Image (tube, rainbow, N blue to C red; front, side, top):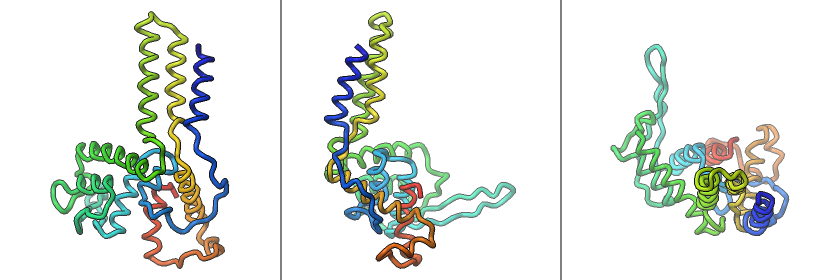
Length: 242
C-alpha cells in the first residue's frame, strides 16, 4: 500500500504539482514583473506569505505615500526602540490584501506604535494572507491557491493517520500513507507559465539587488543610484531576503 500510494502521489505531482518549463535562464532585472507589489513578489518566489513579506508590504505602503514610519529611540536604562506608523491618506488604490493590513494598522486612530498592536492584528494578517493567494490566482500566476492545496493534502493525510491509529486499531501502512500524503502536499502547489515567467523575472531582480555595490555599475542600463531608487527597491529587497 505505501509503495502504491507513493506511485500515485508521484504521478499526481508530475501532472498537477510541477511548474511549467520557463526560459531556464535568469537575466538581471531592474523592476518587478507587471509592477506587482512587494508582498506578491515574496509570495511568487516561495509560494508562502511570510512575516518578512508583510513587513515589506508595510514599508512598500510608506514608499507609495500611504503612511509614514518614524523610529522612536527609547529612553531609560534599556532604551528599547519602537516604531510609530502615521496614516497619511486612505487605502484606495491598494490591493485588497494591502487594504486589509493598512486598515488593521489604523483601527484605533491615525497613529499606532508597533508594540501596541494587539492579537487582532495577527488575525487580520492571516486573513490578508488568504487574500494574497486569491489575488495571485485571479491574476493567473497560480492554478490554485497554494494555501488551499497544502491544506487539502494536510487534512487528507491527517484523516488517514487518525484512521490508521484509532479507527482500524493501529494499521502502520495507513499511517505511512497519511504521512506521505502530508509531505507531498508541500510540493503540490503549481505556478502557471505566467507565474514561472514572473518568478524568473523576480530572481533576476534579486540577482541585481544581491551583487556588491561596486559591481552594480557593470550592469547595462542599471538605474541611477539615488535615495529615490533605494526607497523603490527597499521593500523588494526585504521580501527577497537581500
